[in-house]
Structures are given as structure tokens and as C-alpha cells.
Length: 160
Image (cartoon, rainbow, N blue to C red; front, side, top):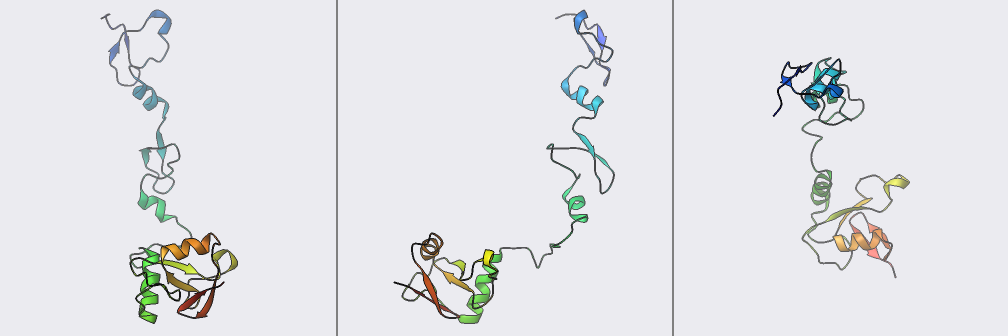
């Protein structure tokens, strides 16, 4: 190994460089180069602290700072959680069903929440528009293999 002939600009460690590699600022590693040039370190717009970004897209130093300036939905303990489960509980409380809400189906293991009027057409997750149906029927309706009609607020009927 050759004798160190130059000093790292950032940490002061002595390293060997060929004369053609010697510049005004020399570094022992890429990390020292990044520290010197400020690559990977950013300033958080919320708290103004300097931090090392894990990704190029990182803008804030922490999730707390990221959420502090949030506009719109405020996430609380009550609002977080599985919305499908909450919708299913609402339906069970209202109708006390124990099988798929499509006439004649006896499936009772898991349910998907289906809206008769789709969300893109203004359909909301409300009693009368949402139904707990089995995954097979939900897939068939979504892929337009079958069509259903609403009998009442707790029952759907397959057409044709």
C-alpha cells in the first residue's frame, strides 16, 4: 500500500491519490464528498432542522412535521382504521344479516362492500346504496358478468 500523500477535505483523514487525481478539495470517500456538498441533507420546511434524506423525494424530517401542515382530512384515532370493516359493522347493526345480501346466496365467510350506484357516479357509502356481498358475486358484478337490482335496502336480486 502506498503512503498517504493528501488529506481529506471533510474529515482530515490522510489518503493516497495520484498526482493526476489531486484537486483543490480531496475526499477519502463518497460519504465525505456528500457531506461537503450537502448532498442527502435537506432542511425541513416545518421545523427548519437539517436532516439526512432517506429518499430524494423526502421533504420533511419526520412524519410529525409532514402532518403538521396537512390541509384537508385530519387523521385521529377515531377516523383511522379499516373503513370496510366499519361499513360492514354499520350494515350488520342495521340489518342483522348472516349471509351474502344477494337473494339465494348462502356464503357467510367474508364480505365485500358493494355500492349499487358507483362512486364515480356519485354513489356514497350509505344504507340503501351499500351492500355486504360475497367476493365471488362482487367480482362478477364488477366485471359486468351479472347484473343486479335492488329489492330493498338489504337485498339485491340477480337479473336474467
